[in-house]
Length: 368
Length: 162
Ligand SMILES: Cc1cc2nc3c(=O)[nH]c(=O)nc-3n(C[C@H](O)[C@H](O)[C@H](O)COP(=O)(O)OP(=O)(O)OC[C@H]3O[C@@H](n4cnc5c(N)ncnc54)[C@H](O)[C@@H]3O)c2cc1C
Image (cartoon, rainbow over all chains, first blue to last red; front, side, top):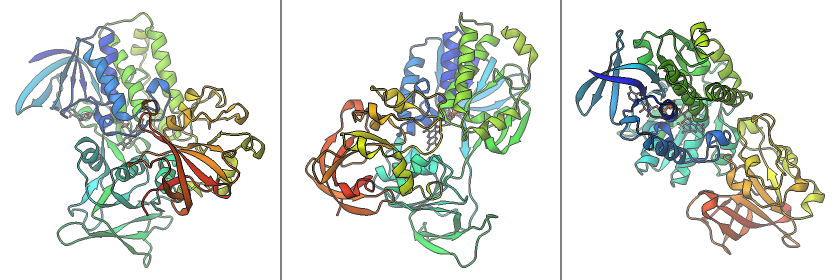
């Protein structure tokens, strides 16, 4: 059994920022990620990010990852375990890991869970044909491994991921036949939609995939229109030839470890699925377990980073570490989150989170 | 409508354009940011004070076109690629559009390419006048194209082939 002070699970923007903040306050941190390299979703994001300067707006995702990884490399009290999967969290606080086929047990004094989210699937006939991918998988293939996924793509879902991956497919020289969206409006940022639209890609709102077809592999899809109740309208079918379909119909938090740890959970649709109750310090209902990023509600890297700093700060302070300007820092982070979520797009997130508030007097008095 | 099609309407574009008087004075920015999202790098990039500080990061940018000198710093910094610079004083017949373009191969100065509208439809032939791809632009090259003045509110993209 390895004694660990602070275990950070997941090395995406949330986990990286949590590790950095806690280590800067003096805590000894172990950060674990199942991928071969840290960075989470950031490493495949070749587009410029939104937000403000504090969240590295206007920089590209992979450059933001580099900035954060440089900071990690300069902090000697952070131990990095890559290609390591966290398998379970037990009642007695033991956490089990798998690395290269060996099984490790650690017992952390505190934990930040920052495991991110996974892509939702979509049911339609023949959706198991080779050539039908999650949009995230295609982005990984293309931008991380340099593999072209196919020649012509139909994108399902006009949220930010669908729009951005469509744009990046075109940058890689792949033809995007169309973007299909079930809802009456484009869900992603309209600037992203305009970027692909002015490349000539049609966006069909209130449409869906009726079925995919192909003998051995995907050859095309039949699309049809949806009515206001999301019911398929017979007689509106048409065909689109494509050798790749990308499904991008939303993400759902990877919250299994939180369930195992016994955290109180709630289904909140606007946050993508089951998410943990948390207090202002991002501590869950289980003392010493903190959350940050998409696992606590699917949002964005900008807010994931700010939540990461906040969870790192809270975890370090829970472990007894202090810095001189802690209260100032905390209110600045809360202010950043507030302003990122202040607009119409953040409205749903704000309401979702409000359903999950734990008013934790013990934590509050500890802060003071 | 923009939220359904992804294509700004002629009225949307009209609103984003500076006044005729300002256009007649030389290069100036056209900010096509139509939706409240948490984003402000255009303000951070602006050196002349033309793009005002955001009270709330979710606000739409406020532009004082009289302070803009058309420097294009904001063009490559906008994550939405929603900004271009228009110079109606380029020649008698032609305006110069400076647009962000993130595709390879890049066109070359002097090359004729297709001018596309906001739906990706070919509108006219345009001439590439200049391609800037410096390190400071961080992989968002800015290309200048000469466009017949009649088409200045229509052209927003280019296509190289054909
Ligand atoms: C195409 C696309 C475009 C995007 N564009 C933007 C944008 O422009 N601006 C923006 O702000 N955001 C953007 N985002 C969103 C942003 O990437 C995510 O919100 C952000 O990465 C969430 O950070 P995270 O740290 O919570 O999770 P992730 O980045 O997903 O990281 C989670 C990490 O946890 C690891 N992990 C999970 N389970 C385990 C386990 N059991 N054991 C060990 N490791 C585990 C994973 O391997 C992963 O590395 C985009 C996302 C996508 C997919």
